[in-house]
Every structure is written in structure tokens, then in C-alpha cells.
Image 1: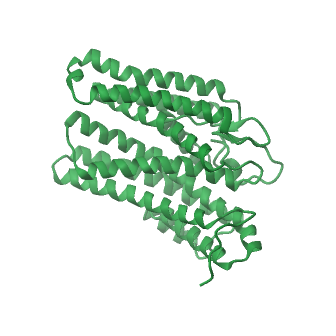
Image 2: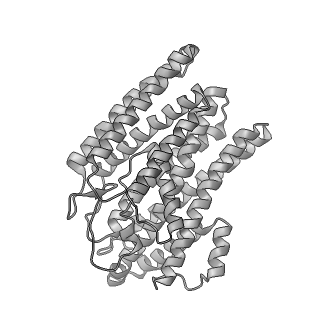
Image 3: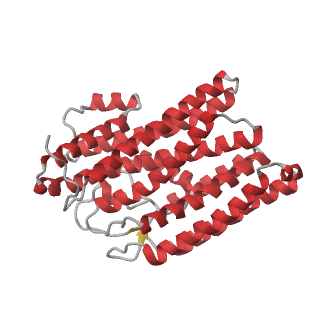
Length: 381
């Protein structure tokens, strides 16, 4: 077997990137399997509501990404993009109905990139590099959708069960750990893949910039998860307030007139998903200066995060005597401070600048006169 080159040029799809795709598929599979097993465990122990909620989050995330995956496959075929010729329309419908569309994408990407890397032909790798990264970016976008529709809400649910009902199991901890790894991987992998797949912007450097960006996201999402959990512990009706936050985020996406999807129906679904993401972290959904919206978002977010333990203490004084109250309060204070600190550090010193100063979720906006592709529309988030 020909030796796979360690580094490539041009497109830059390397052996390391291929291995990252392997790891990404394993993290995704582990997240789904652990949650399904946890749902079965809850059902067998008589906690039907917990089992149903755990399963619902899995199904909602899976169904949504299958819808987008099918739409993108169909869009590629209609625009004569390079797609697997064996995937007829009935075949595509079948694999997505069976909820294995994303695994099909992983298989095609791994197979095609492996053949390219094994060829040892530098020119071929250069020609296909951007196409391979385009396929990887499709996957990373789907993974990001799944992360905020399934992994993050799943963490809120499991933390609530542990703190409020004192129900603990090894499978719970495994599921939470895998979900957390999935969140970290998906947020960074999406950003790196998107920047790498577009030749007209600078890619995200490895090392310290990537680590700082990861810490910024993790240290702002984690206290958000804990504070929302405390609100639910205060009153189940707090979920109505979360629904209001989602509604505000979704409305903002409509006001900004996002243009991510060709189909109006899919665009509405996309905006609803953006609303879910905005419950947990900030995303620049349009190519405009977002310094003010981001500042307002995190001021409101920090106030909400701090209000959760304060209200729990005032309205449920008995919570102060629990073994979790003070550690969680301390953790929220520390992670909020660290998250905002890493945010300021990244965007002031480490953010790779492209041709223009405006950024869409950290991506430099750039309007091209060439034919618009899905990757260009990825910038509209």
C-alpha cells in the first residue's frame, strides 16, 4: 500500500485532517449511543419521563440534520457538483429516513480522502483539497446543528436530574462526558473547517489561537448550562422563559433576513435552529459589525447566569445547605470571567484577519462576484 503523505499543499487535506474526521465520527456515534443507552436505563428503572426527554433530544437533533443533509445532497446533484453517482434520489431518501445520512457523508469523505492521500500525487491532492474540505465543512455544520439541538440540551437535562433528584449512575456520567467532548469538538472543528475550505480568507491557526477560542466557547457555554439548570430547579415554568429567549433569537434571525437556504421552508427551520443556538452562545448571523450585539448578548447572559443562583437562594433558602450550591455559584463566577477574558483575548490579539474587517461568526465576510455556493452561504450564520 502506498505510504500516506504526512503533509499536503494547496488544499491542505492532510493525514491529520483525515484522522480528525475519524475521531469526529466516533464522538458523534458515542454521543448518540450513550444517550440511547441512558434512555433505555431510565425506562427500565421506571423513569419514563426522563427516558422520553432523553430520547426526544436525540430524535430532534437527528431528524433536523437528516433534513439538511438530504437537501444539500439534492442541491449538489442539481448543480452538477461532485457527488457519488450511486446515490439516486430514492437511495438518498432511504438513507435519510433511516437516519444514517450523516454516516453516509462520513463514509464518502473518508473513502475519497483516503484514496487521494494514498495516491501520493501532490497535484491531485492540490486539486481535490478544497473539495474535500467542502465535504468536511458540510459535516461540521451538520455536527454543530446536532450539538446545540441534542448534546447541549441533554447536558441541561442530566445535570437537572442529578442535582434535583439526586439520581446518579455511571452511564449518566459517561453520557455527559461524551456530550461535553462533542460540544468542544463540534464548535472548533466547524470554525477550522469553514475557514480552511474557503481560499479567500485566512485559516484559523493551530495551537494557542485554537485553544483560546475553544476556552472562550467552553467557558461561556458551561455556566449557561448550569444557570439554565438552576432556573428549571427553581420552577419548571422557567422553560417558558427559555422559550422566550429562543423566540427572541429566532426573531433576530428573521429581522436580519438570513439567506442560508434556497428553500423558504428550510430557511425558516434554519432560523429556528439559530434561535436555539443563541440560547447557549453568541453567533454572528449576518455580515455586519457585531461588537454591539455581542456585547449586549453577553451582558444579558452574565446577568441571567448570576441571577439563577441568587433567585434560587432567595426563593428556595434550603438550597444553600445542599452540597452543590456553593460550588456551582463559585464555578459560574469563575467560568463567566474566564470565558469573557478568553473572548477578549482571542478577538483582540489572535483572530486571523481576512480581506475585510467584518466577520460572520468569526469569519471575515466577503461578497464574491462568482457563482454563489453553499460554502459562501455558510458565511450567513
